Image (cartoon, rainbow, N blue to C red; front, top):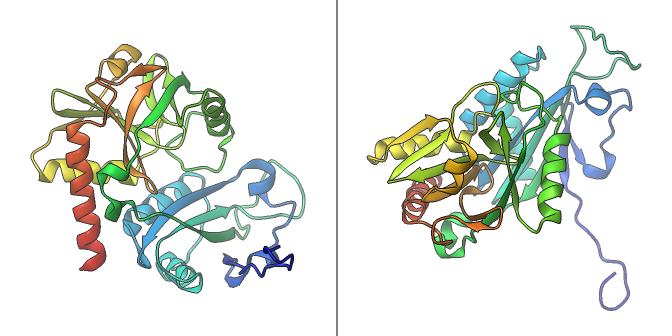
Amino acid sequence: MDESGHLSLIKMKTVFLNGEYIAEDQAQVSVFDRGFLFGDSVYEVIPFYQGVGFRLDEHLQRLAYSLEAIQIVADYDWSAILTRLVDLNGGGNLSVYLQISRGSAGRRSHIYDANMIPTVFACCNPIKDIYDAGPDSIAGVRAMVTDDLRWGRCDIKSTGLLPNILVMQQAKQAGVQEGLMMRDGLLTEGASCNVMLVEKGVIYTPRGGAEILGGTTRELIRELAANNGIVMQEADIDYARLLAADEVWLSSSTRAVVPVIEIDGQPVADGKKGPLWAQMFELFTRYQNDLMNG
């Protein structure tokens, strides 16, 4: 209700479901959908700035990789579908969540038919254009380290995110913003992001493989570093090395690159945002503005 006691009209968002653009309250999926029953589905979160997909091709390449890895065939013009969805929701700065499940067989069974019709769903949420705001507007993140309890194929962007949810809830209860996960004594990634650290002007990030998700933003940072004379390498990172870093960063599609100022209650270096992070943020900003403004 508004201040006068009358019911306020809430503008209904438009979602995409199985070939149709419909109001979000009209979207329905079978209770036998395998995404609901088993987490048998993959997803992407893609930022759109000024109505234009940011690193859209890279996101769609990762989507294709995930679909192939779990043998779901979904032949859609994703770019056209998602751009139209953003337009229908007013354009501007939005993140698009796209989920594709194996579909429904009308019953619960671990065995699936290879000819099942996938369920395709997409929706939008507003995001802040942090690039125009400048580095002073970005708050440093406090993080904690925890065990990586996820399955062995983290390179697939699966919707089976229960371990990530438990880590983020643990972080929330500890009063920090992110959980950094370790497996067999080595850093893998954050519960909702990739991780990088800086030592003597060199950026290090955990080695790629099935243990981590290949981040589109991480790869952009790698490109920007290479194009600007900054060395970036993959490496094994243990707990002591993480805490001794000059800088620690997080990266994700909707947050870009964010500095970590504290881990497990200990400040990262002097507990302030580092100079190489500020340089990378500026490079990221310039790249985004050039891309969006042509």
